[in-house]
View (tube, rainbow, N blue to C red):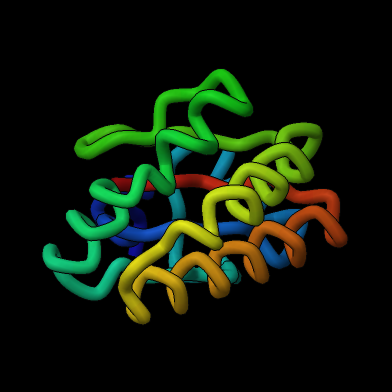
Length: 124
């Protein structure tokens, strides 16, 4: 299987677990040997609730990126600490449990990627 990253991981957030996987993700084209940490936005209601709470906007402002609907964005390793800080600042204002749980999972994924010195890809 060879496919574009956006076709396999649509509506998700991905970080490579191996160097070969990192190379594949960097090219935005993967094969079946890719190993990743993957956080799925399970449905549109969660996706739109995340947007309503400004979760991605907080990362965008802090990291000077564009994480948005129908966008693909890479947070390089040097941006991950800032992204985590942005989420931690935003988290107390979250009203819905499902959004709060997602943000907790996203912080965990970002921290894990930071510890592995790997980027994180947003495929929305």
